[in-house]
Length: 167
Length: 203
Image 1 (cartoon, rainbow over the protein chains, first blue to last red):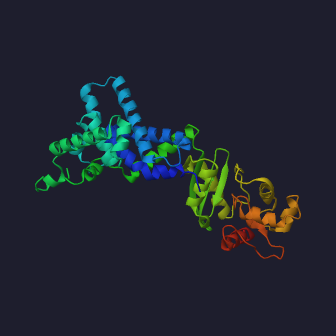
Image 2: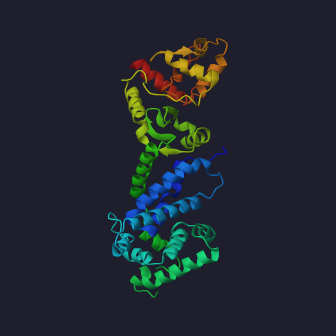
Image 3: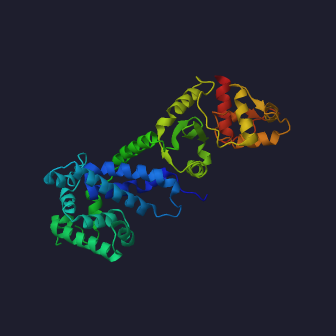
């Protein structure tokens, strides 16, 4: 068979990773909307996607744009600054295991660093693909992620330290 | 943060549980249906002849597939031949699943479902559309069906049409048997054919 997989396979294969990315970039409250809009518009465009396209990068690119739309729409609704920054830190209400500290630490990163970290470490994208999504060079994308991770290591002690072992 | 593997800590902080994904999948199916882009909806049902795959377009039921046909392969073929906009979306197939339930319980003798015939062409399609002329609990020979379809000599072509029936059970190719009264082959396997004919004979 020469054609592409049924869209169901795309959802099954990439759904979890895209949800993690949406949650990391937008916070849990808006992630559902971003995921839904991403997959709905991906499904619309899917018949025209070349069969050899990099589906993961394609989906993260769409999710990236949807996240920008959602953030802009939120800004237009003129939510006070304090509340707006809370948006990214809202934990999912149904999961007590969520690590709030790391969620907050990631939300506090400059947006480009947060995106680079999310797309690389949760989206599994190479920096060359992330550079295309964020604009700029591969080296700049790599640096943004590295800077983000360095800050996270400073601001979020993590499991190792919590167990009393040296960082 | 774990020194070697930040992605592990991050994945834990930003989970994607099976429940979350199922909820989002349902939301996607509903939105795709509302936007008119759910070209093929499918589900499976468990029956006395095994797990059946049911697939429907907006026009109607387009495919019923036995497990022996390999459901993943069938979905891939649907994606190639009709559209790759395929989702597991049971709602569109509720009526089909209910009628199959009733059929296997012996309470339903004919199906009342919109059918999408696009996977059957030409003479094969002509043959298949005549199969409902063979009533519940009856059988007809390949030769008799050839006659019904208006080409008495096309006995072999009737066999091919039955073997490639995209809508088995609903379009009753299991009621076509050999002239000598023996069962003949069946795309769902001879056991499935026997089960269906026994069910219909006893109801």
